[in-house]
Figure 1 (cartoon, helix red, strand yellow):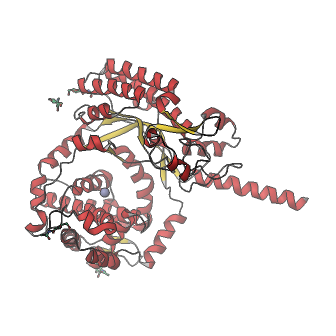
Figure 2: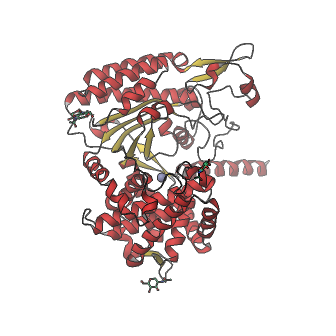
Figure 3: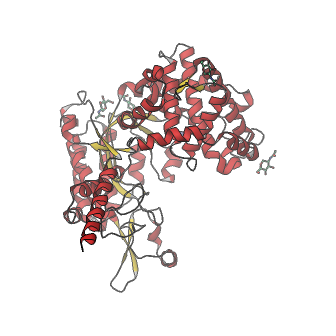
Length: 530
Ligand SMILES: *[C@@H]1O[C@H](CO)[C@@H](O)[C@H](O)[C@H]1NC(C)=O
Ligand SMILES: *[C@@H]1O[C@H](CO)[C@@H](O)[C@H](O)[C@H]1NC(C)=O
Ligand SMILES: *[C@@H]1O[C@H](CO)[C@@H](O)[C@H](O)[C@H]1NC(C)=O
Ligand SMILES: CC(=O)N[C@H]1CO[C@H](CO)[C@@H](O)[C@@H]1O
Ligand SMILES: [Zn+2]
């Protein structure tokens, strides 16, 4: 009996400790933005957007596990409750395992489908609406499947959200944003989003943005088609948006100066349509577990065909990851004398911006046959090489602009922040395009002496060798892409895409040091003075 009690006690202890550890994987970061430049009407409008966002959050709870308050009330432990709020349910988003007693495996299709639905049953169902992004599958009392539109299933919430959006539109001082809000209200009521997506693409110069409705389909692990409800309120960073505009004007010049022969720079560069924002409120699907630092929307290919996409960079969300993850890692791994060069504005953030710009450069089609795209020619080797290209070409552009005097900064800030970023991303592992891309860059640059180690085993940048290594790597990757020879691409990845044992050991130190994996937001309209 005693032994049994002791056993129960220890199991209890281990269990509690586990949830505490799980919680510690997340670090809290406050979402703020300066809104002094907004007038009173815009602030009133924002107030409505916060309310709409909370409704999206309620709907996402329904899509994840069911009624939020019933579920949360059923949890006794404070830590478990807190972790359940981060994960919108009893399953850990990182591992998909339950962290609360009494729950089994996570239903793949969340609440978009009946828990017991099978692939076969879905495939055999004759119903045109089953593949819609905006329907749920349900069972009638005879156990047969049928579909139900979101605006019917969540009728109360949707009616309220739509009328709040219309009230918001009355206060908006921008004609195009006003129009978007009205169309979005209509879209929520009908589950037809095309028109409002087109209106959203036309929002190029308003200072507030609002992503709202069923957007991404990651929460549907069964078919990956059902869009989950979410909301993000964003305030534009005017200074950075101007800078990006300036770089957009320089795209042809940047293309012309790539360190490759003219054969490899014939393709048109694609304009960025890139904007920089402060995230001030994040609800529903976007707030579920790990947080995104950029948005590329809309997802509807029919809208993309007509209008392309807009790329939104979330500056403060990036800053959160920089402060809470990158800096603690750098403190352990980067040579002390160079730590001062691991910085945000002129380092991590700028490198990320230019990574995005760089995706639009280089070759899109094989140089010897313009009817074959590079993506098609390189197949599964494409995405890691493309990510490596974006990283290193971005660094190359910064280097070029600094040498031309167009950008005034210490290039060591760029290089050293890049080094810290490379070490961070290698942690993602070789099964991800980003992880593999960073291994390739790390090993190539190290071979050329651009990255180097101190006697204490810390990582550092060799400024002169770095410049050469950067252009050399740009040249190698763009040439491989342009030639479109998959065998050569495979060889290159085999040679450079691995983690050296000693680096692996160092990265294990990081895991043991308990550095957080991701962020949770301290978010409230009060944080921006509303
Ligand atoms: C906003 O964009 C519209 C359309 O692109 C343009 O006509 C207008 O001049 C812009 N306004 C400002 C203040 O930039
Ligand atoms: C280019 O590729 C296409 C598609 O594979 C092929 O049909 C065509 O013959 C190729 N053209 C040349 C000049 O090799
Ligand atoms: C690392 O850099 C130092 C200083 O530039 C240099 O003396 C040393 O040879 C380099 N080590 C390697 C392995 O390249
Ligand atoms: C809220 C918002 O975006 N307001 C903008 C509306 O458009 C004018 C002119 O483009 C801007 O000055 C406002 O800031
Ligand atoms: Zn990328």
